Amino acid sequence: MLPAFHERRRAVSILTVLVAAAFCSILFACGIGSVSLSIPELFAALGEQLRGDSSSLAATLLELRLGRALSAFVTGATLALAGVMMQALLRNPLADPYVLGVSGGAAVGALSAMLFFSAAWLVDIAAFGGAMAVSFLLFLLAWRDLRGSAGDSNAPMLLLTGVIIASGCGALVTLMLSIAPDNRLRGMVFWLIGDLSATQARWLPWTVWLIALVFAVRVARAINVMALHAEAAATLGIRVNRLRQGLFLFSALLTASAVSTAGSIGFVGLIVPHACRFAWGPDHRLLLPAATLAGGTFLVLADTLARTVIAPQQLPVGVITALIGVPVFLLQLHQIHRK
Amino acid sequence: MQTLKLGLRIGGRELVAGLDWTVEAGQCWCVIGRNGAGKSTLLRTIAGLRAPDSGSVLLGGRVLSEWQLLALARERAYLPQGRNDAFGYRAIDTVLAARHPYQDDRYWDAETDYRIAHAAMRALDAGHLAERDVRTLSGGERQRVAIAAVLSQETPLLLLDEPASALDLAHQVGVMELLARLCRAEGKAVVLVSHDLNLSHSVASHALLLMGDGEWLAGPSAEVMTAPLLSRCLGYPIEAVQHGRRTIFIPAEEGEEKSND
Image 1 (tube, rainbow over the protein chains, first blue to last red):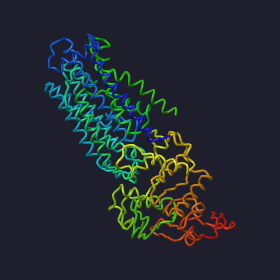
Image 2: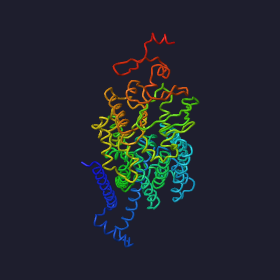
Image 3: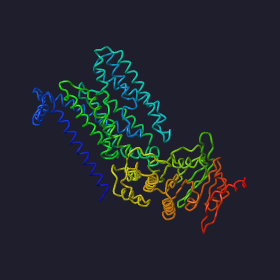
Image 4: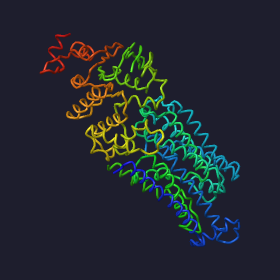
């Protein structure tokens, strides 16, 4: 009867379920592995951890698995959020956070650090630096476009610039792979596919994610108007240029943060937002928080699969997301065209 | 709304020069001209989407660039010519989005927003389309939903670029009657671009003819919408025929075109 009340209640219940699902997935990831832990054992271990005593086997396992699950969650959440923002920026539901070459820049940075310095801590910084350098270059090259003077056909300039920069980075990556000594090649390839096995829990990705999420929720309504009206959104009171610049900067920052945590894990930023849109509609007020929660949950589960499916050997999680992502994406694409 | 010495140029070509034009509440203006005469450019300029090449556009006595975008959005609504829907929003969502200028302090839509949006959709005979995916609507249905969005923005000034172009005959007449009623009963000001002279003549109280070379002519439609002036404006001989109390404009036949030359 009261449509506005109904919409609000629907959004709240969807988000509640997603938060619960996120907790369950992390709990599940902590329990599963070479030695599985039951739920009472998990809580006992958590109690030990909180008391600062991590001598028991369960507590050690929990520390390892929880750290990894949390990294997976924040990476997936970051990628999905970046995906929704990039899709809104380019007004294309099939855009991907990597499409503009930001991850390419990160790959060039990370691989050169591995090739020339081989210091693990430097890799993340180099990846982040590479991603931000490419974003900055893009921002300069597509400045006119982002200022919005290009009129209604606003996406091509930015998109084409990004695609060309991405292929330039791809060439540099291939060059480095072909001159790399064999003992470093494996690490480089794993980094490129996207791997969570070597990550440590850090504050930076969480901070970036939270700030970006606050920004996203604040402009969610404006994103809706821009997604509907493109440049004419200005007549509804949207500062289109400022919004596009904000979306660009935050999606670049998010992508850089995710890629420097875990390498370029593909498809999360593409299929998670798409699946959420398919299930709950394109309203960004719900889509932004829903997609980011679903993205985190998805990557936690995918990573659990990656480290258990052919245990004791571990797969890079990017393989799992690609193996799930490709058929799901094709299915969704097919459904769009049938409409 | 007022323009002072407004000049518009595109690609070095002068479209409009020195346009002094005032649109007042309760007036319905029709902008007439050939393809490329600058009708849409003029509309985009007075909507504030494009800076004037010379002169200025004033709303309520203030230059457009001095207005805050949100405040401006409560004063005038703009219907662009084409629509390109990238995302599968419901039709009602696109109408609700037009309530944005009134929702500064809210995250979700209020019940009043829904009431206004549904009423606007019903006024355009689009009430039954509310839950449909906009990408599945026909051209005419989409156009009606877009006009409903403009109405639910609740502004005193409406700028409409070819509002009736994709509609069937019954809805063309319906939309025009609705616009005429808004001007008469609610004192709104409407500026619309249309290529259908008869439809425009039935609704417009005033007309602005753009000759395409910088010249223009503005005035009450009874004075400006005459066969000789329209022939000059559109570059094709036009005859006016009386049908009961109505004046019908038709393109002259080819034989007469030669005699005019």
